[in-house]
Length: 266
Image 1 (spheres, helix red, strand yellow):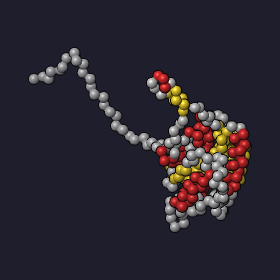
Image 2 (spheres, rainbow, N blue to C red):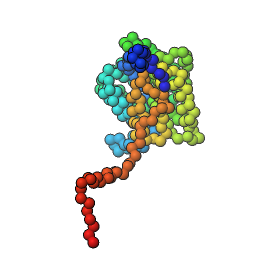
Image 3 (cartoon, rainbow, N blue to C red):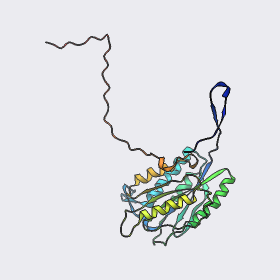
Image 4 (spheres, rainbow, N blue to C red):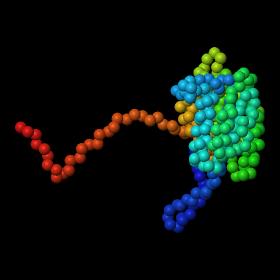
């Protein structure tokens, strides 16, 4: 954890007084990029849609994004959001950054998965797009963050990006199947970690789930509500905490000093 530098004063009083220098927390422009590979249509557990069928990953991601945007706008109505999709490369879903929840809902309604698997996806176009948008955000006193939802258990993404160009923060939410003959989620995860560390400006978080539980996705997305300029290192995160069931504790009976002590009958 970095120490915050301050100014020391009042030495003549025999004590040290520190004054912390104020720092500005910028409004965010957040680009959410959703993987629309057919693997995004794998069924989730523990959640069903209006038709009573289990939610697909993509449906759960849509719900999580609406939850995320609603919560961020409650925290600060000045945050803005745009949306893109990932197949072989990246395409805009909704290019204009907006602070209107209706814009998010409309974008999610228009989000569909592809029907055929794509080749190894290249994230270079996503990073170029993000770098371009981050320069525009900086001119307005804002910072840019990319949140990538990745759903492929057997394909590692590629990218070509200079090490010294860290113009935006990158978060990754990785949903995958369990390891198997056709899957290598650990290798994919390791690649995503290296990619994040390569490009992110502030502390970026990578969260993953291979359990297929919708509630785990929702919990992880809530962690991503944290502002990049106010984050601790990911290893220090100890939330969300489990709600352990505790038996109600009985308070001890208090007997006043002057109260008569009951005498048992002979």
